[in-house]
Length: 174
Image 1 (cartoon, rainbow, N blue to C red):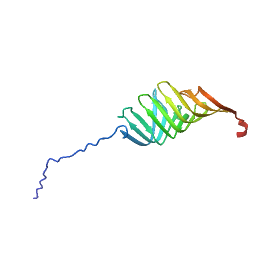
Image 2: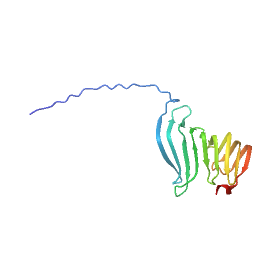
Image 3: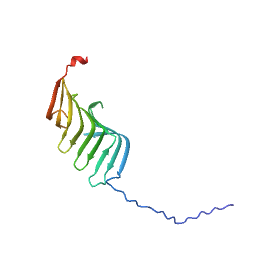
């Protein structure tokens, strides 16, 4: 008969604490994200992004979307009724302020197309705004200018410095 004795000894595990800068090192990094947001028990929004960096321990907690983000508002059949897409985005959690940058493309529920290089969305004030150049394609005309304010649905807006309004001959496109 062979008896095997197993001995145990107190193993010492060394944990090395490494200082990290919460301003430069994210608390969480997510890749290839697609998430839905519900409101009143109904799925209303879909957010898609290649990279989502969360800096929850920074002095000003924030999120960064360095490779862009796409947000879609969905109807009850999960069809997109409006969308916002940009090359990169920054979200300040405390101020509830989004800074969308680079090729910001918006399609609202009325089918208007809005394009700019920078757009801010202040969720506390329920408005979107920009001082950048704005290009708007709206039912038979194109409007261009600088300085923009809008409601969250992007259906009521003001263009502060209108540079041009072009009528569009819709028959050319049919």
